[in-house]
Image 1: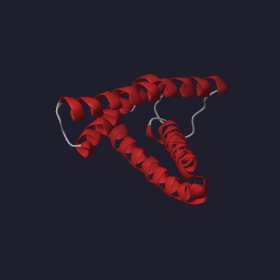
Image 2: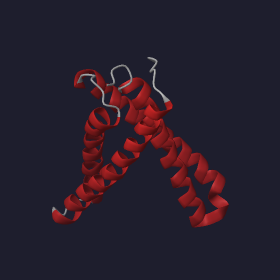
Image 3: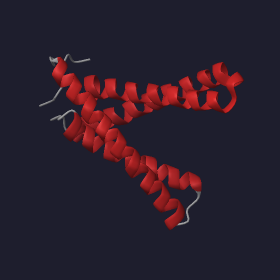
Image 4: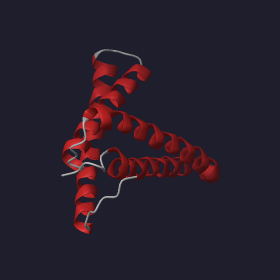
Length: 140
């Protein structure tokens, strides 16, 4: 992984902007899901896939330009971003399964905590991979 000579202030800026993009990304993905599901009367899985596809595209554009201010070309960063998303999602599933097993005795609160742990794993993994691998070699 390429090293980034970033100060603590750069890291805080990346984290702050990443959080903002995450909130906006969630709102846009959910809006697309609802528009496709209820507006176009598509099946749940189709609507969900459309929302996630929109979220991945939106996330890539804003993470590249706004969060990390990368000058990496789309041809280089795009495939890396897709690989990072796949890795983050894979870890999300592993954490979800493990946490569900550990927290099963706690019923619905345990299930909710398992989802939160899985979401946290996804978010942290995608941030680290994006910062140091996807966009890390070419930042402004």
